[in-house]
Length: 466
Image 1 (cartoon, helix red, strand yellow):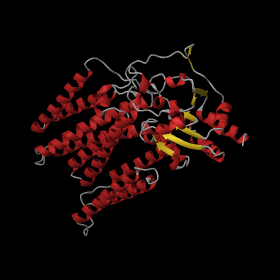
Image 2: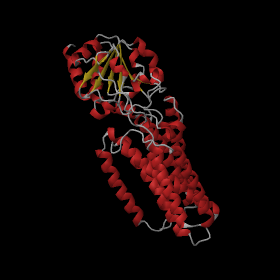
Image 3: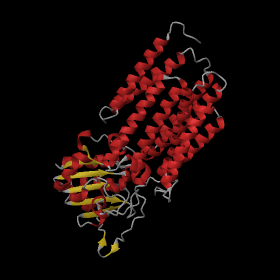
Image 4: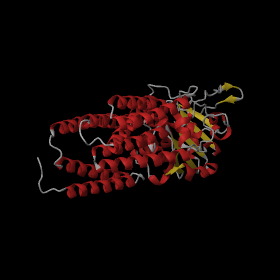
């Protein structure tokens, strides 16, 4: 079906409007108060892009397109209804892998469809090659990230002698094969180049430890954007180019911001293996290093008699789905005149913004949620800090122990509070595999148990004393 009154200018205008809406969507997603509006802008932009693409006279067959859309909609809806917030990081990694694989398949299909035509000039061949190897890197790198986040693979870095040299050798070989493919138009060279890129994607991600996984997720998001942009060049689709560039650049900027917040360079994260050292565990039963435990009633008494309290949420809160229970605790403490704030570390949880999303889901007011840079100075004047499932982001070893894999990473300085209570299931180390020195501080007590159960009991204790 061809719509005769539509000209190329109409399609260009539609794609321009869609791109502007995508930009507005990204701007909206930069803050929790505008995130819903940002999502709406992006959805409208995508709807315009899809309609314009369907009406393009170059689209002559709809059955496979509709089948793909229907299948994707059914699968996507099912996943969206069932997925827990704790599983969002690995879902994002899995979706990035799909983008990467799509880029590889589009590059291969485009080459095979045009290999005997006059369109295979040097620029076109370079677009195919670049799209394929960026997509291949994204595909396998995202699968490794998914495996680590899903705990199918160990979160510990995999490091071996000569690793960086091997990665460099493979990188140069991939680039050389890319050039040879452009010059010779040899499909076996294309396959070899893509195979090396698939291997390199694995080798680049396995040395990255659990503490850096939020950065990895944002970095792979950037890779998926550049893969989409490269595919746009291959297909001659301006909207795909601009959309991919938006995703790629925003992911790269986010990775840079997070690395800066962690006092790490992007190069050290990608090539380093931060967290790779085997931590020396501290035996909590030794006389000089004995962790204190406290009851929920002790925590309730200290909180309701405090003037100022800070709550530090972490991945344990996400696992237990305790955000709604902590909202009730917040309201009860505020009714007793206690000033309560939430402290968010840039890499709390396992993907950027993980804790912010959970707190917003529970309708916790934005004005009591503060980032690390805003709130760190307030811990020294805080009566009680209540930590719910956070570990590595409050570990003083990052400041005091040069041998610690966490050393140099800015942390939430909870240890400076008068009293610290930490809700934990056990003495097990955090995701980075590093023992937390805070647990042995004189002002710290551990409240053992499931985070939601602890918060529910805490709310009941506060009600009884109301």
